Length: 549
Image 1: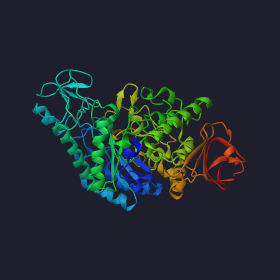
Image 2: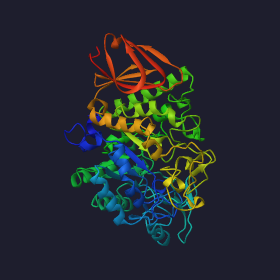
Image 3: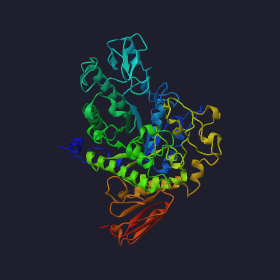
Image 4: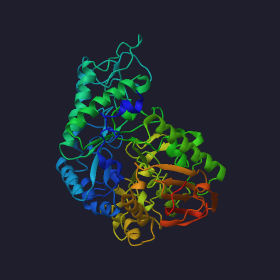
């Protein structure tokens, strides 16, 4: 049995994944920075409710929230002290239930971010572990070592951290024993079993309150020293099967990293995978090193394809890198595997980073909404908000001197006719992060009133995707020219052409000889008897009147 066959639930080729997911457009909200309703300078759930009409107008189907649970916010909420309580800065559990209900009335589902592998050092579980040497909720060692932090309390020894020192790793066991580390427990030991049960309790609690599922932070970090992620995927498979039986319409998606095998999510019973912005395929498309993330990138992925000033040969190599990695994903996990491909996220520079400006993003969005992935729009990218590498370090945004995530987390710019561009009524110095000070900064209001804006372009693409099954994941895909322009076919009768470089590009595509093409959306592209000509910055989705041979 292949990994693809093993990963499916029953005889369903989609693995039991709810049908709504394949057609979805995701919108990631970093809650601190979306909209502030109470004037404290920090975004909140009521602010999101007040702006749901924007998301409905844009046409998105799913909101993905970064962590909203109670936290000391040493790592912007990825350090939880209570998984069953909304952080007071955002509101209450009742506010989340209301938000879910109001979103559902508009045809929008809500996903929460689940930090499964660690808690805050301030979590009551950790306090109990400090007081009781027999408590095995976390991983404790009797000697110093990599990623081990000295105990801050009466318990002797060192605890394992996952990220910052303030994020102790929960104990889900080790896949292999080691003679020099007698503290290692098996994944089925009492401590790991208790943590698995806690995960199911957390998941069930929020699904019972109407959320549609979870994106799981560091999903494959749970079982330690786990070659091939065999024990970790088995753990998630058990949780996913439990969830599917009890909540058949809910979904579970993992964060991934460069070390994971492409079929890990499939084997773990997850409904879709993330092609994360720190991975080679995304970097090959969009990374330009603008905010010092190069230590997280494969050098081959920079420069990137969608840089308007990239050397043609280098950009073509970057596109080939993307296609090779994407093809390997399909080989390992199956061509029907759903993959989320984001514009950016809370850990990485925005699309409009460095020299790349908002008015140069149309080709990128045309690609993202027609490639056949599950597109995820990071809040503000729909108007081309700038990445601000000079933003001050805030709530653990800086991991190392070359990697500060604050620049992609600044408050959304709603309307420059209002204080703080409509984000908050607080004094500017009290905002969660400073807003873009540029006089030409984009706003939702200005672009909403301009039919030629990036915002309208994104909305039109979302609408076209919804109306055109051939542009969604289940339709076929065939690359006809990998370079400038990038030309690919969806469902045999829809052609997509993008040329993000400033210079015009031309390609001879024999498969298109004799085919007539009508532009459905976009501009700057001409198709004539097998020759595709694209102006600088061109982007188009075209309907073919003759099937391509």
